[in-house]
Every structure is written in C-alpha cells, then in structure tokens.
Image 1 (cartoon, rainbow, N blue to C red):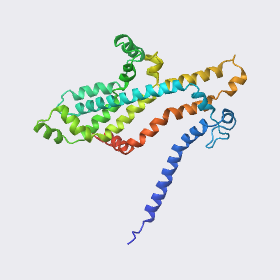
Image 2: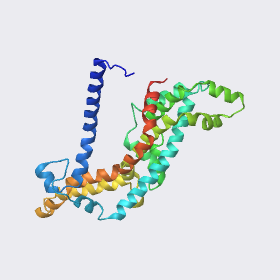
Image 3: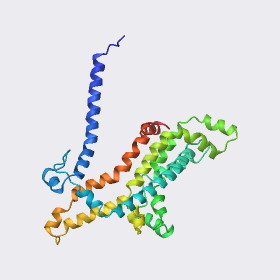
Image 4: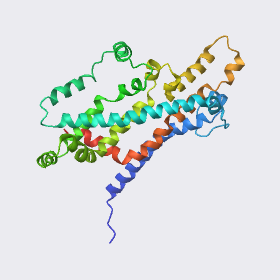
Length: 295
C-alpha cells in the first residue's frame, strides 16, 4: 500500500533539496574556478577573469612550479613527515589529556582545564615563543621544532574531554574492579569508543600541520626541513617581486604566470587533504556534534 504524501511535507522536501543543491553548488563552484584558473593562460585571467572552463588551456603554471621538481618533492617529503608523525603523536597525547581531564577522580581537572582554556584568550606572543624554542630548548633546525608546537591544541583538548565525558563512567569502574590499570583502561576500552572524536580531532591536527609554513620560516634554515607550503610561499613571493620590480623588462613581467601559479599552488597543496577527508567523513559529523554538546 502506497503511503500518501502530505502536500506540506512534499513542499518541505522540495525546498530542502533545492537549498542543499544551492549550497553544494556554492561550495563546489570556487574549487572549479580554482582548477580552471590553474589551467588557464595568464592573459585570459587578466582579460576575462576566472571562468569554469578555461578559454585557452595552458600548463604554464604547472611548468613553472615543476621547473624545480627537487624542491617540490623535498617539500612534500618534509610536510608528510611532520604531518604523519605530528598527527599520530598529537592525537594520542590529546586523547590522553582529554581522558584525564574528564575523569571524576582527578580533583584538579577543573583547574587544569581553566589553564588550557586561558591560552585561547591570551598568549605570550611570537618573540617569547621564538626565544623558548631557539634559545632555551635549542630546537632550531630540527624536526622537533616543526612537530612540537602543534602537538596540543586547546580546542582539540576540549572536544576530546567533552566526548570522554559522554562515555558511561561504569565502564571505567568495572575495569578497575577487574584489576585493569589506568593506561590499560585508556588504550583497551576508551580509545576504541573514541573513534569519532579521534577522527575529528585527527583531521584538525593534520590540517594544521599540513597548512603550516611559519614554523619552517622561523625554525628551519635547512632546505630539507622546509615544508611544501613554505616552498610555495617563497615561489609566490618571488613572482610578486619580479612583477613589482620597476627595473624588470615589461615583456618579462607580462609572461610570468602570476595568478595562474597561485591557483596551481593551491591545487598542489590541497590535493592530499582532499584525498584524506573521505576516509574520516563518516566519523567527522558524529565527533563534532557529540564533542560539542556533551559535558
């Protein structure tokens, strides 16, 4: 028997689908313009602006970026090393911190949570941070200088703490009665339950590491430690300096693919993250909503 559809429900579904399609198109359109711009000629961008389909297909931007493939490969290598190690270690430390702060037995949990939250409102600034990393910890030109700053983030800890609070405390109590230790409870019982939060926070940590270029600029003089984003940033600045140089020949400036190179840089830099997102998508929404409303 076919269920009769109410006219009001039908109108709501049609309107909802139209809104969703409109929002989806608005989200996809900038990326299509980005891809099209990276395969366009520089003159077409100046004359016609950005179009969904390139007026004249060109690979000039990618040829310029790949004119020094060693730098791009080295940048990818450095970014992958920092992102993978930093995400794995940072995710484990963040989950452990959230677990400890959510435990009722930890009497100082509220005080430590306040200090963590306080750092989101005030910070010491760049100069004290630089002095700490370089002068006191002596981490300049090491992988630790690129990994340590992003291991713990206040927002990520808060998400993890609120998620752990939503897990029934009876699980911990029954494990303690059976003789399990704290670390065993955390790794064997809580971590499997925390998959949605781990996927969400892991995505945030990975994005922060992958998009970071300032740490390479501040703490790394060696080329092997320069991240992909920092290498692309320097190449972009090099193009801008040529375009702004009054002594440069007019013909030289006109053929430089300035705008298209910026588009191509974005494609090269965001490629791995676009491939990563589908792997954590099913956990992402659940981890965000549960971590946001619990506690």
